[in-house]
Length: 151
Length: 151
Length: 151
Image (cartoon, chains in turn yellow, blue, orange):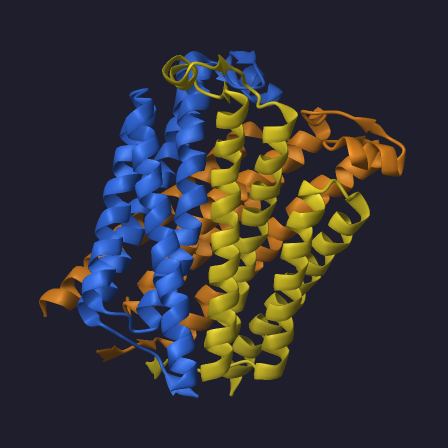
């Protein structure tokens, strides 16, 4: 058995990044539901009956766009959290950890803005920044764990 | 480097809550697949050919309802787990942690029941309870980490 | 407060499994986007205008298949990571942990291959292997935590 320890500042930076992006995804989910309410267009028949709207599935485009931004967030947040937590628990170098957290945070905030603002080139670049960050951080974390095992 | 420690009882309460809700989401996924099998309506052409049913995409409403309940679970479970784990690892007060876990567990069990039973007002209120719990717990965890950094 | 400790080898095995499957899911997401680009069929009108393709929602079948393989991965990776991390943090027996990680890794790699290769029986069996692994590991982890509380 070995005791788990973390770099105190990196733990806070990683944790705050993960919380902020969790809350962003959570709010995108609520915004998708709010967009349905505003248009009075609902995925469930019982909602349309209750709130006096139409039952429409799939969602109209303006609702579906919030939903796609939300879904893309969750698809990237899960591998980021897994790879990042394991990086922090493997006591990876703090400087690289700050760069990973900063790059992912910037990438995902820009991605949401670009999705909602219909700016496709910025959206692709922001997605690519997040993608590369997770890929590099994941390989780095796996490498750190292998080192730990062999040492 | 600082050693990670947790409140023993809160760790168990949080962990058990997260496991129960993971298993609930897992079973909703399997129930979605089972509903397809029962109706002999399949998303993939090869499934319809194999099992002697029809290839239908999107799913019929009764299958899609299980799928929406499942998806909503996953969308909320990910931010709950991230914010909750960081709350526990930040050694947040146990009492508040119990309240967060209890509120989220109740909210999400009621949400699934309300979705499957087509009760829209209960579903909205249960979703809102879960949403507010994650938002408050996330801000609380970020605050605890900032305190830890400054102290 | 109690200090968190882990079995050193199980931590590495679990962590590496979780990272590999995170990266697999990440690449399936990118492959879905790449399949859209290859067919010049885009979910967003602005992408079709920018890259000179058609705006098509839902995706054509070949794109949607990548997307379903990706979504199924994420739906299973989240409960696996939650139950597995809590198993490791509960200091569960290493041998059982190796079996859980190995079974889930094999199940999910086979699932992706079977989905992309349109082999429905293998896909169902691979999914079932992953499902049972998560269910057993989750119950095992909850049991370990309850023991820890009572001892």
